[in-house]
Length: 437
Image (cartoon, rainbow, N blue to C red; front, side, top):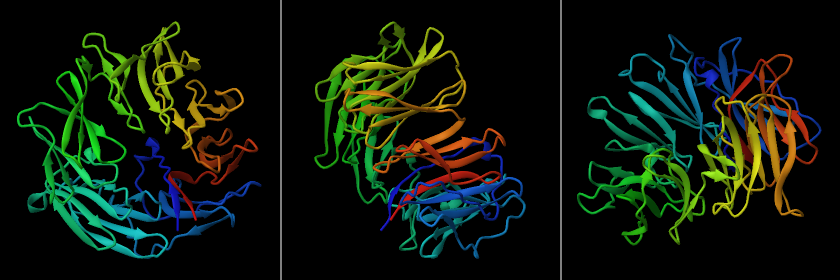
């Protein structure tokens, strides 16, 4: 049985490259020997081809996937490739990049480990998305009698169709979706066999997001925040008399106890709302810094959040408790380029963020002895993307080689502080998923 942690890296530089056949990629590993596999989409720009490869890091060899059914690219009909959340299956779509938007797309789902594959009924497919169960693909068709949102089940080979829905309003478990009208809101199963009103008739409301248990969701009413609970079909007001601004998207904490939002119509400022008590905390001021927020990232345990924003012409990175009882300045820079979000390890013990001026990766960790986060290491290479895993404490990065200026996939061993390459230029890793047996 595979236990998987999804790691998806989509580098914008590859959008312009069409994707064709699968290519061979070399593997080189240092002395460390992790237990996991990596399934990856790799791209060879010199030959304009790509392939799916599984890196068995115990054997130090890649496992090449047979591709006998994959079509040859012709007239821009190269496949777009997407890996399932568990990394076991591949979605290949032909014609998605065609300028003829009404043309039917040919698409296949392929099981990497069993070799089994199935064709999805063709249509003018848009927005193909894997559902969390890794067996269903959701997509939208707009043309003629086929218009609707479809859900293709790889295991049953069946598709169900519903009226068009917004995929970003789907519950985390992929079972329900929120349906909104001009003055109405309801929640429904994907096949519409179950549908229940969320709000009374003619009540204005805006969808905020699902809570992590997929059993409740938050909505914004007129100057209030409300929670709808599916099992009891109840709607309750959590906080009132709020001058809510849409300056920043609202974010629910992983434990469903907190909500980040902007308050103030003329001069919106970042705040945190404690949902059980309706207590509001102002996150616009840290010491001498008055923050104009850019991004906010919750720790998985909801005990901390990272605020990145601007103050006095500089970008600042603050780590804070939700109630601001503790906070620390992580970094300050006068560079103001586009910035990736800071990232947390799944156990909330590690933090990474990339510095604007150099691209160097800063790593902080929780120090039990000091009961605080401290600087652990700065990787002095240009890092395009990173992700941390636990309990192995292996950090995966896409970095740039200083000599060739080409990117490569590597893992960072926290125990030794060493970086071990997995791929070498000119092969480029477009997307990868981390697997464990």
